[in-house]
Amino acid sequence: MHLEQLKYIVEVAKTRSISIAAQNLHVSQSTISKAITNLEQELSIHLFTRSRLGAQPTTEGKNIIKKAYEIVVKIEEIQEEAQEQTSLINGELNISASPSFFMPILLKALANFKKDYPNFRIVMTEKKSPNIIEDVSQGKIDIGLAMLDEIDWNAHEELVFESLLEGKIMVCVSKHSPLAFSDHITPEELINETVVMYDGVIWKDSISIFMNRYGPMNILFASNNTEVIKKAVSEGLAISFLMDIALKDDHYVKSGEIIPISLINLESNHRSFGWVRSKKKHFSLAAREFLKYLKLHISKLE
Image 1 (cartoon, rainbow, N blue to C red):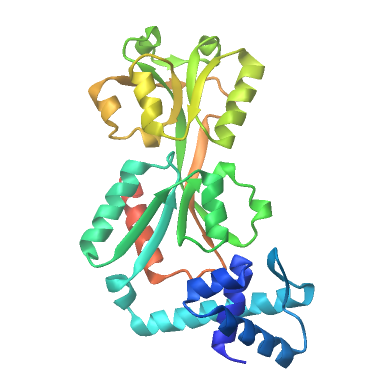
Image 2 (tube, rainbow, N blue to C red; image 1 turned 90 degrees about the horizontal axis):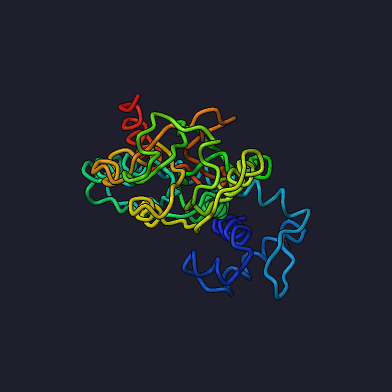
């Protein structure tokens, strides 16, 4: 049994594909196939069933693959300890964030991290929270920054998460709206209002529950592009619901084009935001260091 064999079966288990695993590990498909076959013969069990649908772990293979995950992660930790700060100086960190995430804080943390580690490469994508969780589970990204309320954690035992802060739902209106002069808004005042909404599961569910309880609102459109939503609000086409933390230092709010107003008398108008990672992927020194920067900027808000 060799470490390479363990790395191969871990990657195949992640991707459910020998060809994709070969691409990710920069080896030939035949190399991986032969290594798996040799390991299966050595252990006298079948680790995968192979078909045109891909490579699926067998029942008896799942425990072996789980232990292989643990060994590969430990080896990576040992290698990183030996390298100390080298990985931070020359490495890469893959992050995916929800558009609802506290983007101004995130960007400041990224800027300061990059300033201290100028040769370090950061790759950041913007996705919906469920898509972020899928990428984390598949080992495609190091850290996901998402709205934690949108996730069914019972279905994701392989994930580790931490809440970083709570966000409050605000009603966003144009400066020309009659609502702009209100100190706060009740749900009843929003009946029959035209709304542009963020295209996320929890937002859709919340709006649906809201209308069932208080009355109808006219949904103009839904989008996962918060800039498009804010543009529509600023032009008086509709109102919207956005998180207070996503509006910090926002240019529409600073210029007075958008007025955020507290929504009161609602059963729950708070959402939890935080980071998530997979237990199956090595929690790198770079990832841990970046989270320190992010938490530092969050602490300055408190």
